[in-house]
Length: 293
Image (cartoon, rainbow, N blue to C red; front, top):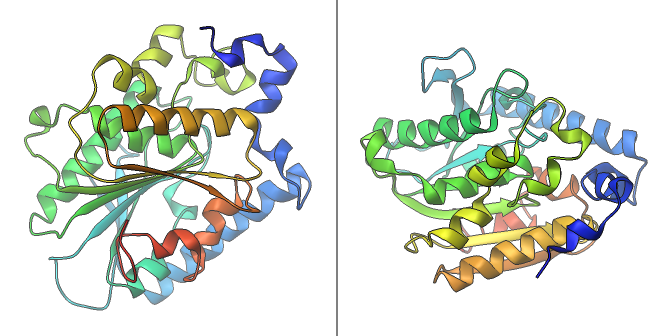
């Protein structure tokens, strides 16, 4: 059966993969600015109020660094959450992405904000490899952790989901993965190849297929390793809804312990901005109290 997106016109496909066009509370530019400012303020607050190690290298490249934020308890036997920021693999940084740090560290969860080389410097292949290296680094640096949780937003959800298909033996460690939180993600990259989002990425169809979590699971189902939450905002575009639902269904078919949530009244940006709030729904199902996934 032909994929639904193939019947869309070029203009409609472009709109479907332009998240700011679907925001109902603000205009497109205002929504993007509010998202950026929320991330900047959350990061500033986290760096002022939380014990941290900033710009810690996980590889040899200039962009291969993480910021690690710790709860007040002085222990390395903690749950760790790694966050991969969004930005269509071409914008964003760890320096404006500490959205969930204060709520999670307040619940005893160490939080790691991961930097990676965005386009045009980085390719999709390189970003996926960097994501894997960051996960391996945290496991090696904190071997007594109580579990590693991965969270990704938008493009970052693709990076987090690709970790299900990593051959960890080449990294010399098997991470203690305990859960994935995939927020408003893209799991099949092929529809993006013919949109303007691909201009700085220069993805070929082969690149897109190789880095699509959906394709990986269809070809080589993974052994279930941990619970996986696939979430999408009510006001995300129909294509983002389709991608999230189909990836969730594929996870279920492979035997993974997957769950799906459409978050009411939230758009593509609110789904991550609201993680600054301790009472946000996603903070209630995260790696810390009150309820695990």
